[in-house]
Length: 175
Image (tube, rainbow, N blue to C red; front, side):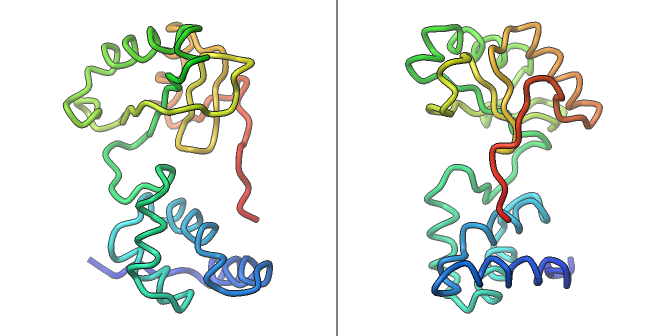
């Protein structure tokens, strides 16, 4: 397998990130986001590429990638779904939605559907307590006031390769 590489366009974006900070080290989080979006996960070769690009020790980059749950050092399914089960969402249907999602997707012990399409995780507060329960998709989009029926529509859309268009908003822009 060929070692991962950043394109010239990726490198230009990385340099733009680095110009925003006093040191290259400070750009590690947006560069990890870029790498995760490009390669799907932050495997050891990808972490080494990020470290080399920023001139950092691999252990330092790995420390950041493994500390934050939003970075995926090992992808388990095609689509990552996170159901908020913190207090507000939990009391407003999040627990029931979590149970429904587990049954609907027929998850194995690692939280992955039998076909490998879905990976389900519980999430702590996603910051949308006014519209519970909330499902975050791929760490990029959120769906609000999710019922079992709405969850089914999300799953159907993702199976077709479509992020849900309804009530979803981008929650991060690394640029």
